[in-house]
Length: 105
Image (cartoon, rainbow, N blue to C red; front, side, top):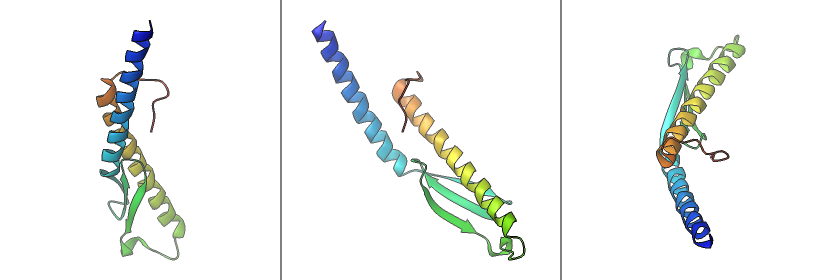
């Protein structure tokens, strides 16, 4: 029984190393979200960190700040969702598609 536990620990350590490597790779990948027909663009990395926001000058209207806020929010949420999908794809590759409770980034 002790040998089985040792093998399990080795497998867990190997998986942990794989997860760490994948996290590093995800940090180097980017996804984006857009709104307003591309007038607002938000770039995030695979760790769901927002790295860039671009706003076309035409969409900036001092009389309608609320619209700009909504466009930014929509683009940020889309970028975050795309980053989550990127993480899920990477995680699926590590686990062979099997969900492992508690394994998140």
